[in-house]
Length: 75
Image (cartoon, rainbow, N blue to C red; front, side, top):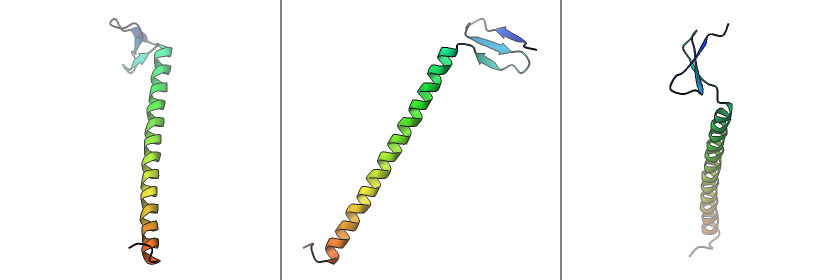
């Protein structure tokens, strides 16, 4: 049984009277919000990957410096 009541301040929301949850009935707004969250996650993943690559390049540069020093190439 669906006991839901419209929220008077915003017609996009209803209140479930069984558990008093506030539910968004505007499906396009929900989809838009989910897409925004997904984009934020993708952006964070890209930033993390870039930072990992920067760290790896730094490690490679340090190793090359050690190799050059070991073979006498650095003065």
